[in-house]
Amino acid sequence: MSGVEEPKLGEECGVFGMYDLDGNDVASTIYYGLFSLQHRGQESCGIAVSRTDGPPRNSNVCKGMGLVNEVFDAEAIEKMQGDIGVGHVRYSTAGASVAENTQPLVLNYIKGTLSLAHNGNLINAVELRQKLELSGAIFQTSIDSEVIAYLIARERLNVGKVEEAVKRAMEKIKGAYSIVIASPRKLIGVRDPFGFRPLCIGKRDNAYIIASESCALDTVGAEFIRDIEPGEIVTITSEGIKSDKSMSGDKCAKCIFEYIYFSRPDSYMDGVCVYSSRITAGKILAQQHPVDADIVVGVPESGNAAAMGYAMESGIPYGTAFIKNSYVGRTFIKPKQSARESSVMVKLNVLREVVNDKRVVMIDDSIVRGTTSDRIVKALKDAGAKEVHVRISSPPFLYPCYFGTDIPSSRQLIAHNHSIDEICELIGADSLGYLDINRLDELIDGDKGYCNACFSGNYPLDPPKEDIRGDYEK
Ligand code: AMP
Image (cartoon, rainbow, N blue to C red; front, side, top):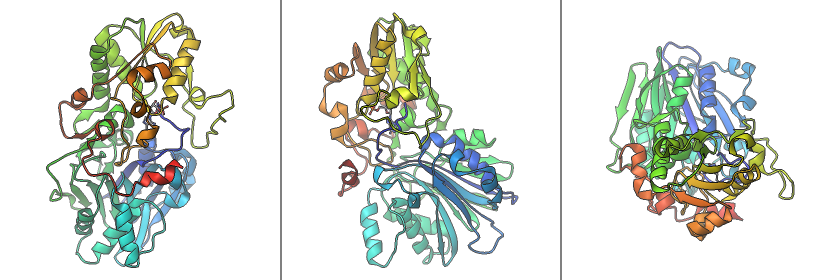
């Protein structure tokens, strides 16, 4: 289930870039692309486009706080003329939820305009920013994406091509980044050497698209070409696609939580269908934590496929126990602690008809602080469920994420401070089972190149010296 009520840490974003080689406007396609990536960020969004045959610095930007359909209207999109552009949806940190931090970032410098949209978190942004500031740089935002944009613009003055400047910037930045960049006549897609966040390429007629997830390509009628590889820089010009893999490393660390929770089930990432990996997680749960029950239900949305997998493996019928209100946007007023309404139950309601008098297996993708499970288990019992057996399609969260997923510090994570039996009691369940960390690779067809640091504490890169979370936990 997607949390909207808690102040959130980390950057969860979606990016979408497009270059139409026939010169057609791209803004409306970017709009629909962002719409299908809305699950990756609901706080702010934006689009920047320009004309490749226009005068220098002709970019057209529209961005703001809110959902895609709140920030743009038909008139705004109509006015945005340009055959190249990038778009962004963002789900930001608590401390930085302000309009100046919206993306894409648009930078005017001596060589023209550069628009950039970034998904991920750098771990050395603070040091880089300080260094740049000491050499005269002035930053207008507090996001690390501006550090990347600044480095690229600066390096571009020393090299002949923007993709060379991107490569030089990559030599300095560390962490998670999947980026799309529109320079005056090039669309560039970059994925960090570990490949933390996804990024793929598509094509529609004579237009190229670079997007966070393949579901965005389907939505705009584009054909999936391939994933951008970890460490790869893809440059799209009027001559087609060029690739530079000289920054690729030998170790990948794709985020396993993209498959468990974050991405849309209809996306394919690095050759794996997200829906299938959730089905697999459910099957493993059924093997490892079987229970006698009458019905298996998923907590929408990401729990649904795993619940289906559990049902398939166990033979217990699958059912729908929750009806989700999909209209919870940024303007949702969080109920006060004292109010009778809870944020969770405003978003979800239980179908009494389905669960009354039943022994229920309830599957969710994760437990963070435990608030959601606690409320939902209670709601199922209030609706007449005789027993509620909670199964979680990920291992227990024990460590924060520094690479672009919103997982708070250890002390806020219920599993860090409590045993599984204690958590079971705290959430009021009759039994509780988590996915075994040793079987995570089965979710991605045995691929070992993934990051599971939020479960294991084995970070592929050392966490930042200065913990960026300090600010947000007060
Ligand atoms: P909690 O109530 O704090 O235990 O949060 C658990 C719920 O948050 C689960 O239903 C998850 O689907 C959801 N969730 C887990 N990770 C995230 C995330 N990074 N961003 C937003 N929601 C999340």
